[in-house]
Image 1 (cartoon, rainbow, N blue to C red):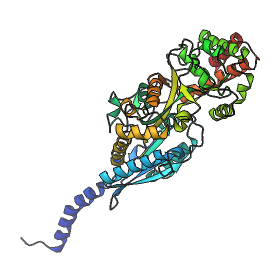
Image 2 (cartoon, rainbow, N blue to C red):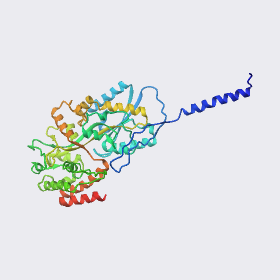
Image 3 (tube, helix red, strand yellow):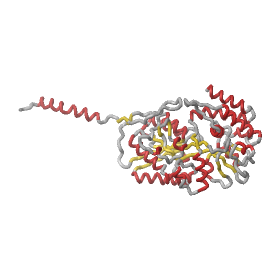
Image 4 (cartoon, rainbow, N blue to C red):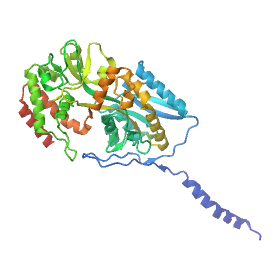
Length: 439
């Protein structure tokens, strides 16, 4: 049969149109899987990543490049032993996986336990303005982790690793990794409240409230700290809770009254002088200790372990009955990449950076608490290892940031009123409860 030119053109159109339509569909963006979110215990909204679709990304020629964002104090290019160990570990991962790691240092713009404003602002800006410039893995403190997760800037680890199901974690570190029952972080370093003292001046450090009242020195702590960590620790060590069953802030009036009575008695005995109210942060209280204004100070374990000063020793906090208790926080690795494959590789890097052998040497060199018992068992300094084990086995995670903001301010005000004799303990406790209930 002979086919004329018109029939041939019609035949080609019928044949080619489906091919054109099919080839066009191949370039559609791929939907990125989202981490599931469990209902929260507080009134805060469920955590869900902000970016719901992943744009098509062309794989560059050569090794993959992962971007890491770190706080300044964890800079691997710094001139200290811990930094060199971290740099070596990063290079080892590069070699093993044939990738390139691009490290950026970010200023947290906040205190030790405050939300990392600089990191959060940078992540927020990048996620909205330039999502392809987002880092793949970031190191965040606990408050920053909470904020970033609630803003939808992070992705959970649950689909990439089961590492947090390993029993080889201290309990506070396990809680450190969770946001609304999802694993949003892999613990890297810990820190906890301790009592530091000069054994040359203190025969025996006070273990309980009664011993504080008869100690040979005043006890320094930042009474003006808006987060009131020491007051909070004494309250929780007494059995007090700070959240009701619905997750709302609360304080027990009887327990708080007992804590403030102790402070009042210590003030009268000269063990908690009124001028403690001038100290608004840990650094100020530590400086007063260095200036020999007292021989006992409440501080963070990292301050002691980083320096190991020859005239100072560390022990657990004094509690009502001498039972071990402290508050702890820490830093975790978190996933931020919109690319599924890059998140998987970043999760692998996070696991590599918390491996027990590396965690042991790095934590001992850095002065931070290793979040895994197996890492602590490999420390070479036996006295420090014994102390850290006591700290970490008695450690409780600091409260959620939204609760701490409200409870901390109320506890700070009550503490200052008692130490400055502006109110008695019973009245100060009543006023604190009223403020919590009306917020």
